[in-house]
Length: 183
Image 1 (cartoon, rainbow, N blue to C red):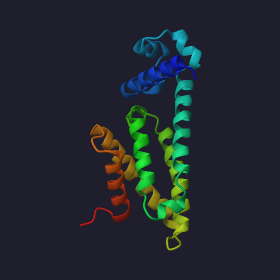
Image 2 (cartoon, rainbow, N blue to C red):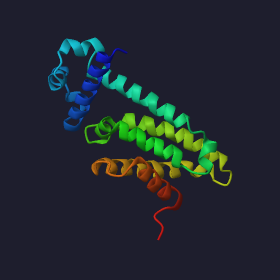
Image 3 (cartoon, helix red, strand yellow):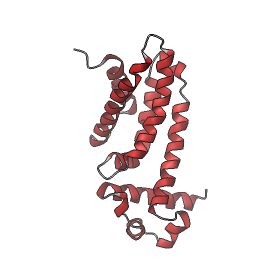
Image 4 (cartoon, helix red, strand yellow):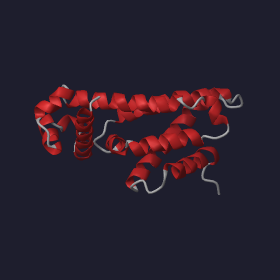
């Protein structure tokens, strides 16, 4: 992809996420997005059919990156520590903070975030099955609890302007997942 194309797409993505913080996707127009990022509407149409096509393509790119990250951590790696995967996940959220914050915000589309969680669910389930002492019938409760907590932590991290490093957030997450809040 040509450098100018990448730059234009990055501008459009930044503009889209800014607008998503202000209003639902269905209320965003090509005209206002093009004006916001100071490009011609025709330039937008060289890249995307409409706003929904843009959102779909951006989601697809981000999902593929997320999938590669998750699949790089086999369940056998998770036996000793969750840290390697958690650090990578928090780095991913840090690098994609604009988009993730928009999707997690009030105007975002949680279905995209749910796709990411679904991919994680598969990997965690594989790990769960390898831990023979755990009851597979309880997995849905376990994962729902963990996923909801992690989404809450990511939201709070964004609200605090990501003051902590991905490693610090990963350590806190691992502690809470494995040990709870303690006494």
